[in-house]
Image 1 (cartoon, rainbow, N blue to C red):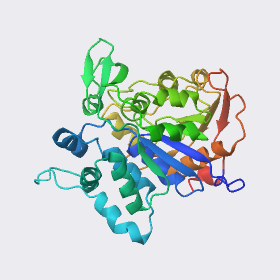
Image 2: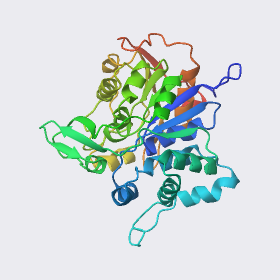
Image 3: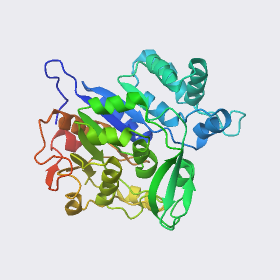
Length: 354
């Protein structure tokens, strides 16, 4: 599957919905191809530098926005210095308490512009980003998780750091309910392909569907809905989840069936499995029959980039998404229909990791 080609000068409109590290991988791959890319980013983070700035000044969390801005940034020599600076983090033992320089700059720009969107746009121009980064909402809310015993965990960081504590998550919600950013809604409505993931299910992906108006925009959009499933389960969120369990939750919160789902069937090294097993994480089992209930098109392949932290391979993932954007229609890809069209990822350069 090669690079996307324009048709009569038209660039496919791709919206990537998620959080920081997961979305960043796909965005880095997509920016090297001819496509109009928008990143809709969660703003319900509550930990680290972002949480400190939110608690002290009332700003929206900047961490995920910063990561997506850097992922889409121009990588020429002209932006090298500012990119390095934005990724710099001060020592936790210093008076700056572990703050990211990028978060501090976004905080300053927000104060000057009286507007987080204006701050993001200013930094986008400085970084010459190839696309648009859009906060999913413009007002603060707490991400909350109701557990199976009826108790509630409040704040994204508390949910994220639960570990293997039981009981399991029953549902997530935001308090208060805030309106979705109109620019994010418009991007979804106009997209040719809407991509959910990769990223933590309950703290990076689903939160984007919770602001008022976002799930309905995704549900009614004419663009193809694609879900990229996680490589590994996450303690405290998705331990024991099969691929179909991820799919079930995405369909529930999005309000529509998926036109395609991308799942990894590549081998994860024994060393990586052992490292992740120490914290209670394991590779997501791909139960092909179960997936047929939620997506008529399942794309299986080796999407793993092996490293200290397991991530999706940016180039392979981007080529797959762009290939979906260029397909006229899917074999049975009507939302909500039940069926199965299992598609193996192409051999050749993609399988070799080129």
